[in-house]
Length: 484
Image (cartoon, rainbow, N blue to C red; front, side, top):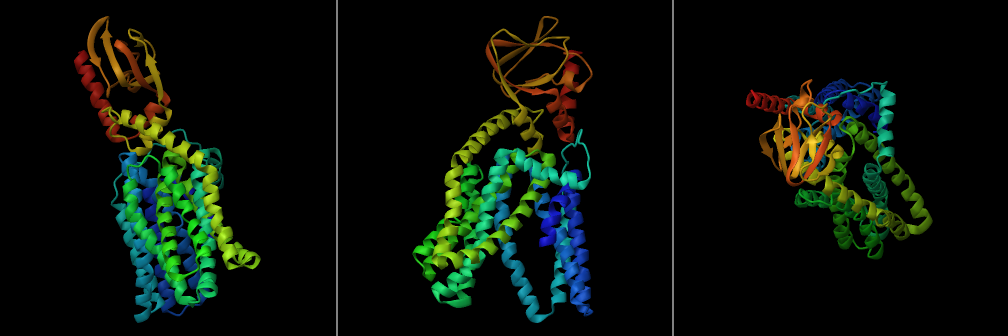
């Protein structure tokens, strides 16, 4: 795992350079080759360091999969709600994989050899690469992106985390949860042996309780698909990793501990929904894989740090004192940052209102989530008094306009052509073609509410995706025909 944690920020820089499906195909293929080679080496009795080296290659190849997968999902989603729902579905799948994978390995090892396990992983990795190759999507346009060497581009992942306060907060509270998880891996062993007196079996039961809670929480998290307070739900999930430890310290008995730790598993599901949904709406598309890569690396570090500090806490405070000390970390942090989480939720609610208004316009409806989020983030609300001119025939074009309230009178040579209302837009002809404004548009019958999209934001989004480009060309052709 350690080499993968170091390599992830660099590897995910490639996922922001290249189409993310190709990164996933390449990772699956490399993992298949490495594990197939490990299977052959194990079958032939090769020295153990050779097999370990191939395992490192396979694991390092896999480290790019989760960040690239998270960054790919928005391009396949048609709305923020669909993205959230897809993230929710990931939970049960991940939990099932975590459960089924070790069970399959255990069964195979009971009847065969480690080489057979390597072979099965190789086949599964190849199947993963094949399935990803069947995905059809259009990558977001990469316009005016300055390319550096991979190390500098990897550093951009750390830079965006430092620069975006909202994304940093979402990641920071999740890292508090991974730190606590590292501590729990040690504390459960000590709790089971020293306090519960049930030995190694109790360790298994307590760990299984967390897994059961994660599965149940993943299923229940489907209720959050349309939620407008994902940041605060993530905060609740983080706090749920601390509160059960405090309760275990107060009531060190096996059955209550199982119930308490099930709540921690539920917390994991809530954390995942917020962590995998919010950053893709807060971080630019061209940096998302690197952002998630940095998080994966920091998560590995935080788990390791927790596992190292937990024994020191036990030595310093005793088992129950260590449970209290570690259990206070997450709830205390969430109480401290709760206003910030509430602010993020308010920002997302406002953003969803803008997204909904933009989605109502036929020209923008085909855009995937990253593009529509980009436009929503750069849209400027504007109110135009009744009778005032928005654009004038013959002037240079610098923006596209989406009507959210009121009506617009469109005229050419002072003759009325048509009127437009909410859910419609205007101004695209002079942006899509090298021409001046072809008509005059003015507020008609009352004040007019608009979202203004600047040329530099509008053009890459609309011309970067074939369905939106086709819609734009069809609209321009229809307007040309009407004008003719």
